[in-house]
Amino acid sequence: MAVDARTTRRMSVGVRKYLGELIARLPAAAPDLRCVPIGRGENFGVSEQLGLPLAIVRSGARLVHFPTTYAPLLRPRPYVVTIHDLIHLRYAALFGRSAALHYRFVGVPLARAARRLIVGDERTIADCEALLGARPERCRVVPLGYDPELLEAREPLVAEQPFLFYAGNHKPHKNLGTLFAAWAAIAPQRTIDLRITGNADPGIAQRYWRQRGRLIFSGHLTPAELHRHYRAALAYVHPALSEGFGIPMLEAAVVGTPVIASAGAIPSIVRPYAWIFDPSDVGALTALLDEVVRDPTPFAARAAEGARPLQAYTWDRFAAGTAAVYREVIECS
Image (cartoon, rainbow, N blue to C red):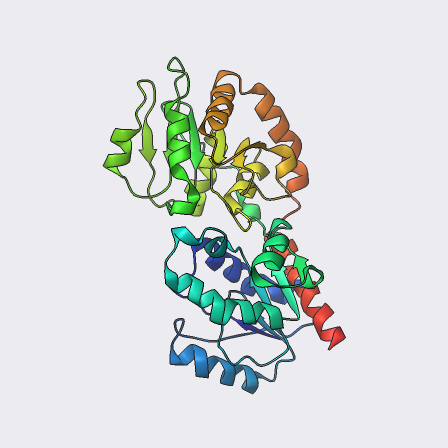
């Protein structure tokens, strides 16, 4: 069993986390399978197009796992591929022409010839059918996970005021303008900060302003710092137009923090315990944020209800679920 273990500059933080946890946990999750990490170099180079196929053949693997759509044009079969999301196709206007060309010549043929498509959430299955032409019966849902260290007791984050929290990048599909506008529109008598990861943007801070609250850019947070933010936040808010899964929403929910997320972003396993809004509706998000600041008790109660069942979704469970897909394909080959 060979896994393309390259980490490249084109991979997001979430995809790097996915691959790292998979490689680290497969030996314990699947002792019956000999999983060999292979590959080196960046995307679209000689190492990918020639070196990777050669390494796969030399490994003697019965099955290959491509964890992204960045794969060689010549692919030894059989293989499975992970489709994290199809945001570049659903919202093509937000991305360059190169993304469309990649999917046309690499992503679509890769998906259609795969024995199985591994997706993190059931929502992605419909996109695979509509945008890739992949049959739904070949898709397997394997939810992503969280690190059990998240549950360890830590010194609480000391914040001067109550705050809402968002963790992630600032790309256009993250729809942060809706979050900023909704936060700024919360009833003026409420005292509430908004903390987001990433570097400071003075222009944004000037445009969105509250008399009784601050927009705080927290920079890059270590996992321990991120965990402290989840626990201290009044609510975790995720306004993205779409997500393949959305690890921060699971992490926040696991520690009992209320999750407020757009309908296109929320993981299906988190949805029953979260509050949902249309990502284009600033007013709807404003109303939810105002409500949680005014009376957080019912939000905290529903979040507490979901924390225990969601704690089952560890990275070990994810690795075991992925290994089950491997076995299915190998047994049918």
